[in-house]
Length: 225
Image (cartoon, rainbow, N blue to C red; front, side, top):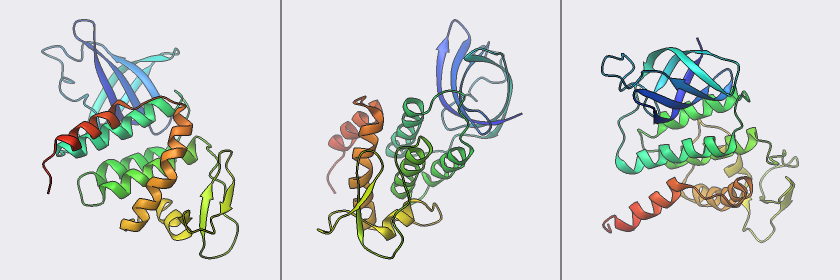
């Protein structure tokens, strides 16, 4: 049975649930879990966002039927802001990945990002996942010209150009974005946000993310340090 992360779970009819899953073998999958919300269902409470399941799926249409699910790893216990980070990851996948388009490397990047939400490198993990997702959907992440150092700017269509005014992104930042084993320092995180926001806006085509709006509202209400 394939491994799958729960991206979204919504009530369906009286006792069932509609699921969006990220699977290691088939990419994003829609599925119905019949009776999963019933009082006697062993799946009750297991089909939560960020949970890792070992699943069985059947059906030839776009909406599969969940035939079996074993909980491999429960959702991580996260503070409020980190939950919003996770919703943001899930919303990006739901909006930018087509169904049944396998992306095993992105599945691995998602697993790393969800695990990182527990610790101190959550923002680095978000930026690295954004980079991995943009790469997987083919948004022009061409290799940089050979050489060392320098700052670079991305142009719509995928080309990189030297940013001689220093307002681009350092090669070391791009290397850290591509390697989840590395963490980004404060300067690299600023550069990464400056790079990735227009790329994500381009990919989303004007669609707004509910999770981003929730994050802005959450931070506006948070007490000042």
